Image 1 (cartoon, helix red, strand yellow):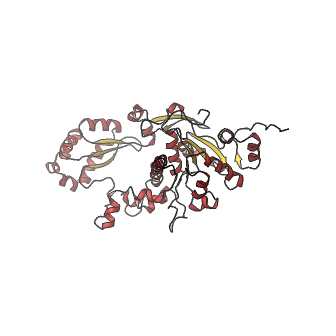
Image 2: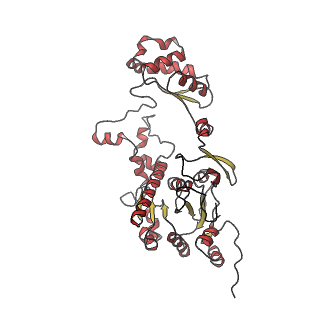
Image 3: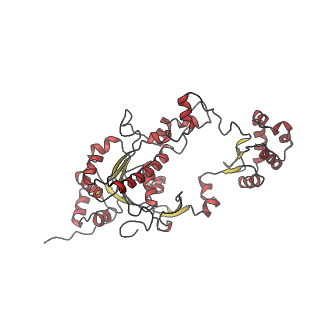
Length: 407
């Protein structure tokens, strides 16, 4: 980072964001803004430091400055308000009462900076009967009905495994913040944004919500099957947890699959029509499973694709990191993490306008940038920094210089 704390370049390099978020949804939103050059000041309570061992902190908090600050103290509030005065955006994902109780709600902040854009991301929104309930991404996806659409076991709802409500809300926050900033540039006034974690999943469930509201459709529990294609599914290949996905969408692709598999049981003339393939799909699946079980998944994928059969490797996270297509597109970035050393992470899914990855920095230690933020951004003296440290209001990861004694 240069002296201003910005990574070099990026389309959002003139933006300063105060990040009070935790866990996933909020930190993902601010990470995206930081990748595109915004100066992100990650504000954390020193009593609850980030845990680096689980990896989530390192994944979501790159390209951010770290300020350890207690907002429950009056002096801590004063520091925060001083930062609001010189910032563009505040993002937080506490329950609604937290910022109100701290007397740091939007109305208070606009009295300090009328142009501030504030984005609150509580589980269920700022108002309503559920508003003060805590929530995580798994809670949000359950409230939105997403587990009912997973489609594997009709006896038990299954979560997505990725806490779907979190990343969706994070992406919504980015769009809403940028739209508010564009409005600010036209009108000169800030804006308050209320993003409910639980609502994010509900608006991305496609036709199912609309169909249910009309009473005209109820999705079947069909796992990897397709109502109008056969065979269609994932088949276990050689090795531990290696799978190939195959989707035959028409009769021409069926003939191509039969040619590659070369098994007389699939050449039964009745299988030339979809209706018969659907009727005996279980038998067809068993033949395909026998054919793939001792073959390498990449070999299968190339063999089937070359023959004109839609097929693809079902990749896990480790395989994704070595994907040749993503590597060729320079998607990944390697960051030298504290206590972990060099680690590979996903980069940006939207090419262009983000800062050069060579200047990206790993997640910071708690309070690593406290002095820089207080002294260089806010103009606090050494005496003020020492006073804040002695009162445990601000955490400093690095040693403070001895304040100069006044005459």
